[in-house]
Amino acid sequence: MKTKITNEQRTLVHELLNRGQDRQTIAEMVSLTPGQVSAIAAHRTIHNKRSQLENRLTRALPKQITTTIPSTSDKILLGSADIGHVFWDPRSSVNPHVLIVGESGFGKTYTTSCLIAELAHRNIPSIIFDYGQGFTPESSNPVFANEARPLQLEVGRKGVAISPFEVFDGDAHGPLSVAQRIADTLVRVYQNLGVQQHATIRQAVIDVLEDAGIYSKLPSTWHKPMPRFGLLHKKLTENAQDPLNADRKTPRTAASHISSLFLFDIFRNNGVSLQWDELLQPKRRSTVIQLRGLEQNLQRATTEFLLWNLLAYLESSGPQSLRCFVVIDEAHRIPTGNGSAVERLLREGRKFGLGILLASQQPEDFTSIAFSNTATKLVFQVSDEKSQVAKQLYKKLKTPLSFLQLYKTITTLDRGCAFALTHNTGNVIRVASFNERFRFAASEAE
Image 1 (spheres, rainbow, N blue to C red):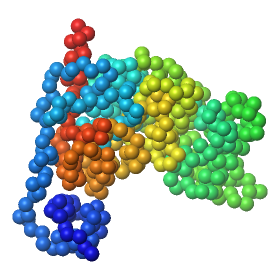
Image 2 (image 1 turned 45 degrees about the vertical axis):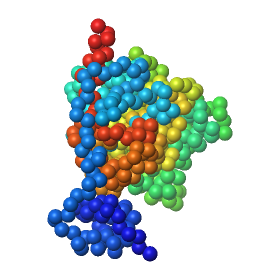
Image 3 (image 1 turned 180 degrees about the vertical axis):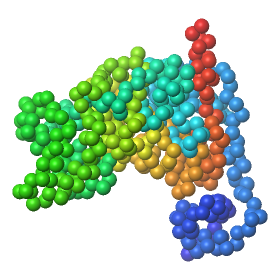
Image 4 (image 1 turned 90 degrees about the horizontal axis):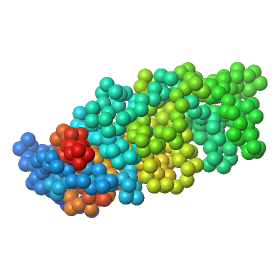
């Protein structure tokens, strides 16, 4: 039996119809039948009144942030709401991770820079992956440059002195674990690769390591000098040209798809040296890993291998309190999905003292794991055509707010304002500027 359509459902249907959604999608989002959606559409007029439910919160934005920001130890100011100041406390939180989403021009990158500077001010260094111009010396805010003091590492131009072939302490099966990790990563990055190419790449990694005298059944060989990463492409090419190989097509297509990874020779001994123990010292404050200039798949692969390397370092150090943050401002640049490095860090990173700050323009750039494993969320204006963000927020929200009000709020926010979800409580905030954040700290120092 069809249920009666509520006023809330009717209003949301009108809004989604205005956005051009088809009736089947609307029906699923609003929990109606397609026939009910069609009936509402048939009786629409341009004079329909908007629901009065919106008035309670949608435009109830805070007027202005107070210029005097209270000193609150390790708490970091997010912004000002009608209830007062809203803070984020990464050190005391059992889940320090942050997710930021919002359309271009509404304050996403600016806020990310503010939080990095705040972390640096509290002796929590950040490792920032920069894919464009967001954190270059030319584009950085002067206050950010002064507080974060970013060290620029030109990995995209100079390469990096790590080897994806490295056997980590946590690799229980040595070279076999390495081969699986490399094959999994490349299949996530180069999405045209299939099951056969995955198996071919995995075996090629094992063969390259054995050629270098590193054998899965001989742990004493696992920490020998690693061969050049470029030998993986060479091995695939040799297999593709081997007349005794009945299946030469698979290694040929695999080598072709991942060729850009070796064309630029990113992983090389004379590349930028990453000394994690030095970069994670509080005095370092922040490090920018510059990957601009590389094509997107190469950026994704490089990020994934660097994150695996960082995770291995943290695991070797053992459980610790919060010691650093990884910041990725364009989440679509990273491989996601089950088994990826970023999702492993989201699940386990805090145990080893690592927090993650993910930011992106599109809700689709975040998986359900990213939404569920980030306790603090800042949502700037988003179109949210599939209600993906609204649904994820609504699951955690304890604030008395209807789904329709939440949806209308996040899709009509003013520039510089965000819906902040902390401790399962949501508030519309006006994000604090750099000057507002550090004016009080500067006066204290004097």
